[in-house]
Length: 170
Image (cartoon, rainbow, N blue to C red; front, side, top):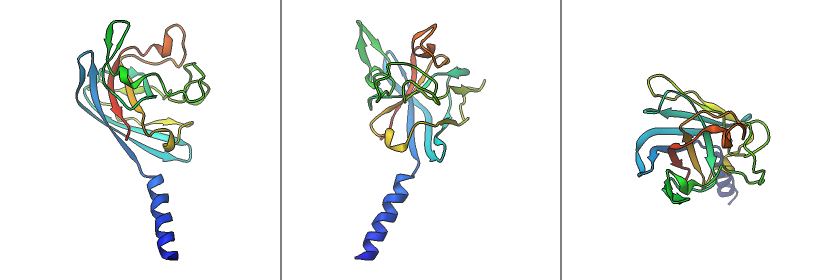
């Protein structure tokens, strides 16, 4: 019996620190499209590390966020279909209602900007120091069309704009 308990504890401890792989797909006003790759999320003593292996994105900086709902489906808003609107808003369990820096105050789902190289690939990891693996289940990971200044000024939600890639975290 003691061996069974020890084995169960060992397995649960191991699984608590297992990497999470999120399949990412292109999204637009027509719905969910083809795969653009994946993002592997791992836990470190400094927070969560998001390691993208993405391709086919526009070069430059992109807003990168954890969204509240596990959906990449279209959703109507003000009479228009919104790409991945089913994902809802940025993950904000403390109800701050403020976009902020990943290492400061604001939405817990505000991640560092994602850098996409001239060839359309993104491979540079980003660190989210306030997130834990337990925050991820039942959420969506989102890449936005534009960059992110981690402020609500001059544009809301950092100015990232349209949602271009989405993945559901399981």
